Length: 362
Image (spheres, rainbow, N blue to C red):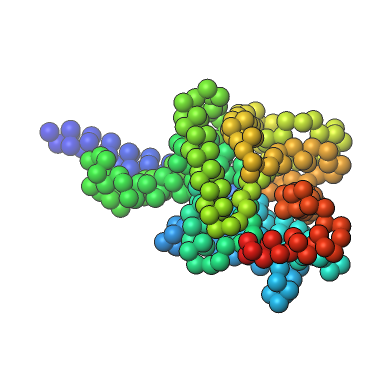
């Protein structure tokens, strides 16, 4: 009996030691990979709890906006870190470059670009954030979602229609108390779902386990995104605002060949790992196929393919200054086309009529 007890004790000790060792190794892998890809140990920036949006960093300042007394149009830009700007400089984000282009040389109608991008946000989190803002503030002239990369990344990691950053940590903390006997140990259960080991497994699933294009779960994910965007379009219209969904460019989802000299200069981390690119492309394309005929949908997926210099950072999602400038130029063209509709604003009378229409919207 004593020998059996001793054996069980040793087995338990080795089990606990193995779990701790696995977590320590996972922690090391996650930290090293974050530093390798993003140049910092942590993935993302400091956030704060918000009862409507779950967590927020806050509005990032936009340069080149007109002063309030100009009576400018207001555009709200939602998205993840690509919209917020993976740069230390506020004047080098997409909204700042766009404001510089739009407001140069005393425009007929100035516009204020509000950068509401949040690191890690996808369409689900952005919808919650929009709800908060429409409760607190007057609606803008346009609500623009800049999406694609985070929706694809989180679906590849979590394989659920409800995927978003922190999905398993939040769900594990709220729901799993009653889902299993292990849930009685609430602190341990929450720690398991938020562990580095679990995060490493999710990253492994994203980059190694291929998504089946005919997967029922992928269809459910696409269905949920379509319903969400259709709903947001109706919500924006109810406030007198225009809703636009811009499908962001991403190295992983490009479907048009890029010039060979540029490809040789681009040094993408894990760029040759086919499963990671496959998963991005399958999810991107499934959503494009479903959304491409929607009146609010604009596809920027391949706008960078004619580039003559590298525009992506090593992760293939965030951009260099040159890439953000190109996106801002395309935004300028697209927004003017969408807002002017059939109007040709080449006379003072035409501008006056458009201003009156915008004033009614605002």
